[in-house]
Structure formats: C-alpha cells, structure tokens
Length: 303
Length: 236
Image (tube, rainbow over all chains, first blue to last red; front, side, top):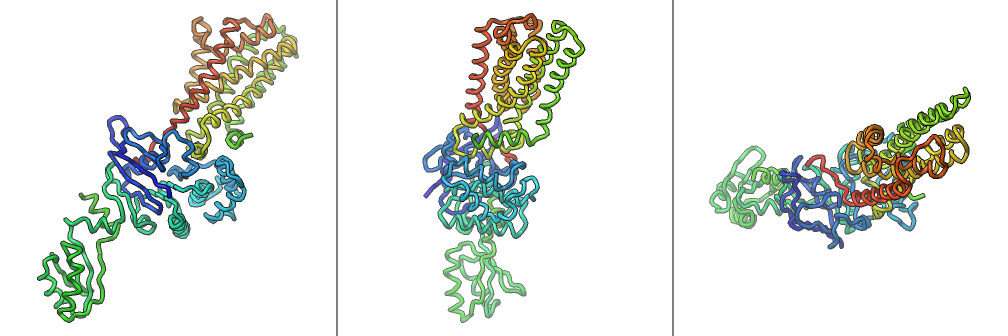
C-alpha cells in the first residue's frame, strides 16, 4: 500500500504564494484534485512528481522524498499537462523506450501490456506526430503506466479526449484504483471528477479547502441547509407535518413534489420516516439534491 | 547505445536543424579545395580558412547547434519530462546526451578540418587539427549543454560567447584567451604539429588544464542542474 504525503507544504514564486500550507495524504484508490484554473493544482502535482521543490514542508511517497530522488520513479508515474511527446517515434517505440529506461525485465511484454491498457495497439506503429490529441494522451498514459507504478499522477488527463475515450480512461483509472494503485488526477471540470472519484482534494487559491468524500464534506457544512427532493402520497399534508419539525427550515411545493430545506441532515433524515409513518403518508422519493460535487464546490468557493 | 542516447540521436537527426550541420563543413572543404586547385600558397589561405572559418566558426557553431539541440530542444518542448520521470541517475542522462553531442560535433568538424589541414600542409597537420577539434568538441558541447539548462536562450548566449568573447575580445584583450576554447584548440593543434599557419597564444598546460576544467566543470554543473530540474505550472 503506497501513500503520498504532503506535510505543511507551501510553494511561492517571489512574492506570489502558489500553494499555502497544505497537508494531505493520498491513499490507494482514485482521488480527484479539484480547483478552478490557477488554484495551484499543477504546482501541487509537480511537487508530488518531484519536479518542483516545496518552499516549505515535505512531499514524500512512502516516506521517500520526491525532490531530487529519481528512484521514486520506480513507484511513480506522471502524465503531465503539457502534451509534449517525441513525435518522431511511433507509440510502440516510445513506450518501449520508457520500458527500457525503467529497466524492466521484459520491456517488449510490458510495452504490449501498456498498449493494450489504453487500446492503442492498432495505431501503435504510426509516428506519434500523426496522432489526434486523444491518441497522444493515451500514448502518454501508456508510457507512464508501462512499469505498473503504485502511484500515478495525471494532470488534466481528459483534455482532448472524445466521449468514448473519456469513458475508457475513466474505467481505466477506476480499475487501477480498485487494484490498489494510488491515483491522483487534477481537473477543473466537476463532472469528470464526480464520475471518476468520490474522494476529492479541493484547492482554492492555493489552500486546501476540503478533503475527503465530497458527500461527507457536504454533510459537514452545517451552516448551509441541506436540500432534498421529496415525493409522497400526500405532499401537502406532509409539508404541514414537516414544517413543525425543528430540523426543517423550509418547504416548497411544486408540480413535481416538494423541496425540503433541512438545517440538520442527521435529525431530518431520522425524523422524516417517523413523521410520514405517524401521518399515514407513503414516501415515494427522497433525494439529496445539493450533494453533487458542483454544489459542494460552489459552496467551498463562496466560503 | 543507451536508450537516452538513442532517443537523443533520433531527435537530433529527425529535426530540420540537423541540416544546418551540412553547409559549414562543405564550405570549409570547398574553400580549401578551391585554394589548392587554383594554386594559392597555403601561407595566404591557411590562416583565414583554417583558423578564421574552421576553428573560429565551423567547430563552435556546429557544437552550438548540436550541444543545444540534444537537451535544449527537449527542455523547450517539454519532452525531457519523459526521460526525467525514469529512475535513471541524472549523471547517466547528461553523459548520454554529452556523448551524442560530442560524437556528432567531433565528426562534423574534425573530418572537414582534417581534409582542409591536409590540403594546406600535410596529413600530420590535418590529424593535429582533427585531434584538437575533438578536444574542442568536448569542451564546447559541455559548455552549450550546460547553457541549455541554465537559460531559455542558450543559442543566443552561445553565439555571444563565440562571436563576442572569442571572436572579438579574444583578438584584442589577451586576458580573455585563458577562457577561450578556440585558443585551447589552436594551441593543442600547434603543439602536435607545429606549422607557420597556427600561432599559440596560451601555453599547452593552460590549454589542457582549462579544457579539462571546461569539460568536467560544465558536465558536473549540468548533472547537478538536471537533478534540480523544475517544471513551472502552466495553470498555476
């Protein structure tokens, strides 16, 4: 089990603070590094990948520092945001070169495995400069995966991919996470993060704004009422009963059902079945409607 | 050949930049052949062609093109990251790239200098020039490799070194010659095969020691610099 640890990490450029006193631990599984453009995601990824020294604090992979420590790349793979590849090589040559530089016992087999992982076998003997953006991206992922690293860092990996390639990449990351790899990918697109990972590290203006499962993060935001979409056999009567409940701060009724605002998530979810049962009302639907990553993210940005 | 050297060589010869290596050696051989063919005395054409063109332009400019091309281009376009994310000692990466740079620069400059020296004086003189050019290729390549890690404009700085430091100051300010690779090359060739065509301006020990300092110092500095290679975030 490999973990990536950041302890009180800051990074500044002259007078500009890009990353401000961040501590986090990445465990096996897929984690999304989320934040608006310019929040400091790439700086954090580069520090994790050993391409930037922290101005303060430590960045380690299983207690080994990443800065000035090339040995770390036996356990770590990086897909940087910049789409630079050796265009004069074919994908097979490019990935085989990575396998040889990793000093793998059977570079040829590792190359074929990595090509298969990203579904690039058919085009593997064409020069990379003839590829589409998505194919280049998959080739870079294959090169980063060829040594089957325990930690894989990807900076905006879905850029330039069509929906099918995007889906395939998401499945690939899911699969690697399920196998016990520690995967971190950055993105400023909420839907991507939501589909790939429940665990997020949210960076806003160089600070760690939130960390963990985004649904749990939402529930911890007690200063914001939780919004539920509710449908029942008698919405109007249920609304009357709910408004007398302390944990409920507001109820709206419309054609599709009710929108209930609850100040206390735990008390409300415990009280609702009891109230419905006492009133003889059958509940048909109960969906938390602001637990999406988008809501969490916008709340964090506003905070 | 290491994988790093293989990628470097493929990159070097896969770029149009490699075509820049052709004209200067061809010009040097062409001028020497022409002078010899029309019967101009070597004393008249030897110095301008061998020193003015061969040692002051062909050798350093070819070394500049190659020396900055083996690493600087990869740093510029970001492909260096693929090599740096491997568990390779940075020393091995620098030595592989330096090896390719020296090999290509030495071949591209020593062969035409050998031919031109042969036409001007003798085979021995041609060999002396070729040996000195190989030493020069080592020193120039190490210097330009380091420049491509220190600055985003290694070609410009390299040209300033060749044209201003060696070409201008080296002619008029004697103290600058101690830090001039061109002067080491001239001295080494002149000591191997003394002729009236070359005039040493630094002693052989100075030339040998300073060339070694350039080669080792720049290689060690490059290795250390590559260990601390940083990527700036594009969105941060």
